[in-house]
Amino acid sequence: MISLTIDGQTVVSPEGATLLEACRSIGKDQPTLCYLETLAPVNVCRVCVVEVEGSRTLVPSCSRKVEPGMKVQTESERVRHSRKVVFELLASSVDLSLVDDSVQEWMTNYQVDPGRFGDLAPLVDDRDERHAGHHYENTGTHAETVFQPVKVDNSLYVRDYSRCILCYKCVEACGDDAQNTFAIAVAGRGFDARISTEFDVALPQGACVFCGNCIGVCPTGALMFRSEHELRASDLWHEEEQTVTRTVCSYCGVGCNLELHVQDNRIVKVTSPIDHSVTSGHLCIKGRFGYEYVQQLGDLATTPIDDVLRRAREAGTV
Image 1 (spheres, rainbow, N blue to C red):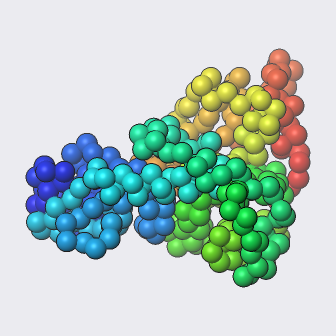
Image 2: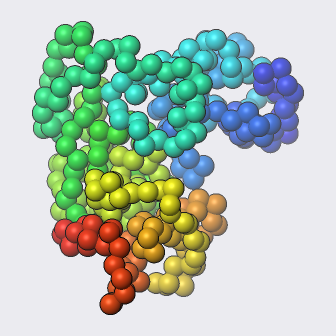
């Protein structure tokens, strides 16, 4: 066991634990965007940084291991200023409207004001078409954004990279942390870096096996069920009216747990609990998307969302 001090409080943590885990053990949670317990930390969002006495720079609490005698500050002026600026830089260029409530609360806590960098710059072109190293000169009056058209090339899920913060979670989940498919990676450099398939091909023509594990780990809504995307576009997505039922996948004997999100007696998306010992939140294409067979309601009364779900289902095949 390792003894350290966090905000003046003595904490005892197991050897090998991270500062984030130590903070959470005493009820001092820290903001995170790129961190997930089931994925290897990649230290890219930098909103979880804390101040360690003797360290020249702020350190990411999600990956820095505890050490004997450490003195850590999580709410110093230096930490608060860094987190505020990071959130402002992200929110000035990326659509963060779909981040969860906890992130919204952190942004309110730090009085984040992304508008101070200027109005959003107009969309010039599809960022995926830019050549490496070719950048547009900023006039200084607008904040450059990552906005681009939503990529809709299959019937299962869409990619809205206007919401992407490059947290790498989808890349890790598609790679050796979960799926081992390696269908997506980071392309480009600097501000033009983005998540892409090989040679920027459409998902159905690439290596993607449509497990949807990238959707399950995305913190901003950049990756989204086609059904959810269509319902939001039709103003029929009402999360507050949805119920979530935990059950076991019926396709094979592995025992994966599913969370069925139901609205108007229709399954609108499927997730998996991260604390489940079998899959740790990951599923295959059948478990995540193969629920349409229970939606065949015959002559029963239809709901307003049925036409939307049907359009999403019939939009194309993978």
